[in-house]
Amino acid sequence: MPPHEPTATISCPEPDRDALPTFTGYRNLLGLIRQLSSLGGCAQPIRLEGQRTEIDASTGEILRELKSKELPAGHLLVRCGNRRATRCPSCAELYRQDTYHLIAAGLRGGKNIPDQIAAHPRVFATLNAPSYGPVHGRRVNGSARCRCGRTHTKGDPLLGTPLDPEWYDYTGAVLWNAHAPALWARFMLHLRRTIAATAGLPQRLLHKIVRVSYAKVAEYQQRGLIHFHAVIRLDGPTGPYTPPPAWAPPELLADAIRITTGTASIRRSLQRTRTGGLTHLPTKTRASERRIALPTECCHSLKEHRERQNKERETAASAWRDSGLVFTTPTGGPLDPANLTRRFGSFLGRTGLRRIRFHDLRHSTATLLLEQGVDLVVIKELLGHAHIGVTAGVYAHVRLRLQRQAIDTLNAALSPDEDATDAPASAIVH
Image (tube, rainbow, N blue to C red; front, side, top):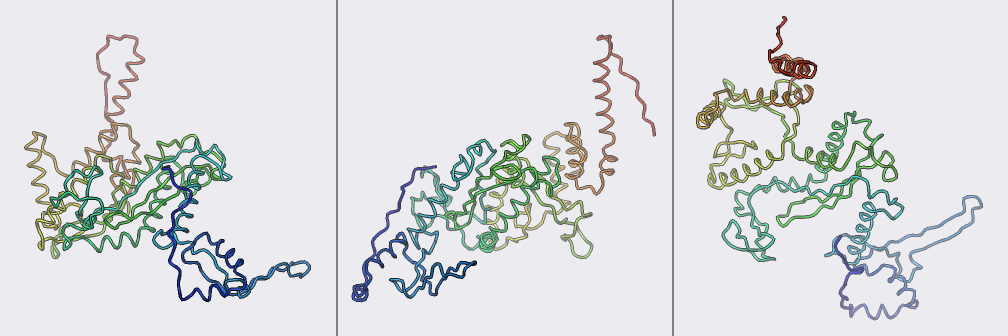
């Protein structure tokens, strides 16, 4: 944690000249000073009216009674508790210090948290907002030029503003900020599901074995979008007082976060119909609606693709169609399957690869995964098959080849003659 001052420097407000006669007219001036001192310099205290009476339940005796009108200020004054330094520097500083000590205790112990908490797996994660269009920016060193051709200085009012306001997705940006709390809740839900799936546990039993704790801070970026900084920690079933299971190291938590954030959700299919042309339709089966994890390299490629797509959006100008699709034509429309097939064939010809159908890439992926020893159930979920029998039937030839290799390995280990080179006989029984 960076060093910080124990107290904030708060400017002294100018006194209200008109209120000075009323202020000096207080009879209990020392009591008023004590009441104001208890606010700790709050700039906008809340004034409460009413009374509070504490009564002994067994005897009915009045133990304590407080009436706001009898207080020196004529009201019960409490701190506003605002977290924004622009509204109340004192309360914002108090909140910052409290947050620091709470997070520090969750990382190293203290504040009734055992010191053993320092050994619990934890990950510091930053979840950024997506791009809704290119904006003016500057690098940390301040030397790199912006895409507008200028080098912005720190504090430049153009920083974070869209390069092309007409084509910036303001609607998406507003919706992101509005739904940021719900998106965080959904992220935590899927993170717990991912951890349970990795451990081979039903989600309903995860809390009995491991608990996912976190502390997060929502911060506005220069472009006005919310992003989250969070410390996520794995604890035992009763929280920080019990250690997590041995199968849950920090690497598992980090991988689960990457899987949860780097995923693709498949909800619809794009098909050509006789009457409506290319139309969004439901998927073939319920199992086809799925969420699949994306490799890190794939996520990087998608980010580069998004940058190229933003340039195409700028070039297309008013001709751009905002279809919401990931892969589009240079004007934002859906890709025609026939054109995709032709371009894929041209790509195979240029690279000298064997000509296959675009759909055959699914089979290639499944075959490679099977050869790497990936469980058939996982492959079934990736491909979106409704039943595992479909997956087993389609790739039976691969499984048979893997069995043949396994038997050859066993035969080599058991064979007394190391020079034997004859392959064993094989047969396919229907």
